[in-house]
Amino acid sequence: MSGLTLEQVKEELYARGDPNLTPVDIEAKAPLVHEILRLKAKHNVVIRGHNCMEPLVFGLSSKQERGDSLALSRYAAETDADYIVFNGVMFMAETAKILNPQKRVLIADKTAGCSLADDFEIFEIDRLKADNPGVPVMIYINSDAAAKAKSDVCCTSANSEKIARVMPGEKVIFIPDILFARNLADDLKGVKEVIYPGQDSETKGAICEVHEQFTLDDLLNVRSSFEMPKGHPGRMIYAHWECNHEVLREADFYGSTTQIRKDIAERVDAGSLERAFIASECEMTSNLAQEFPGVQFWTACSVRCQHMAKVTLEGVLRVLRAIDEGGDLSEFEINLDPELIEKARKPIELMLELS
Ligand code: SF4
Image (cartoon, rainbow, N blue to C red; front, side, top):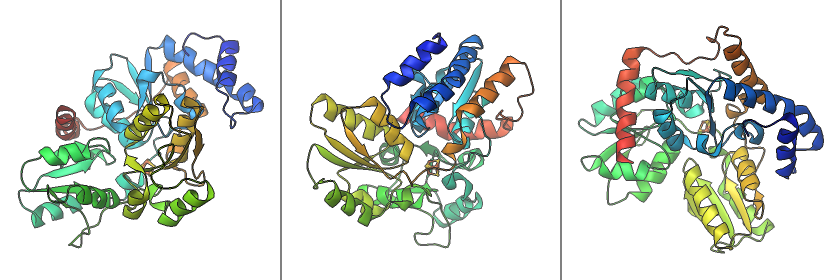
């Protein structure tokens, strides 16, 4: 949308046909969107947008600037922009900084955390290593830089299985997400043993406070209330890897946000998808509903990520105004110790190489 006049921005927002975006919202928010896009172009800023951002914030990023954690890491490693504004949460912005230490990486709200990263104690890695000498440590990208620095390889939900398979040996330690780890252990049974916190030890992992809220009963209720029988090719229930095991097993398809989007796109192309329920963060469904208007989407919008929601249009505009005015960016800027960057980069680069 860069280079559009205010009127053109409004037209674009109306054309989305989003039922959640009323004329009142559009009239109120279009000037913010317009100003952000003007400053973005003026200062050669890249705005990376995660799939779970609310649609107006997500729409600030061009198609090439959007994606899940894996896609955003890849883009971060390639950009030639002077500034990277990261519309996502802290671990994502940190990853962008690790891959681009010479760039200025900014986030609208530095308190936008993630329960997976924030609830995991780094000393648990030492305990797991001590209990399992020589076993490689694979860390989910939803983690702090300091935890990554102590791990052998990083992964995202899109490539965890692939990376676990190619790691040397018969076992792999997976941290910090214990629900994800159980799902992965199940999928890799007979191929690779997945060791995770709390499995057979006192160690503690973490869970995604959003995805853990979906239950088997929720999915069964969706099936009966919305006539979505299991196995129906045009009425699909999707679940993210971070959900509970029984939720994953009940879903018609499970995967990362990119894998879910890809499956939807393929079914839409084939003309077969009528309805979809997505057991994941609510705004991911909002963004998919905009992209695939012919599909009837459902989700549970009581299930939101409070961290993702901290990044707002107003916050992003504050970041761009601070750049424009040449002001102090410390409120927004990601700064990491160079030694930590060096150590944390290795497992991320290995992931990019292997995936
Ligand atoms: S949805 Fe879950 S995994 Fe994603 S940022 Fe929020 S708490 Fe973290």
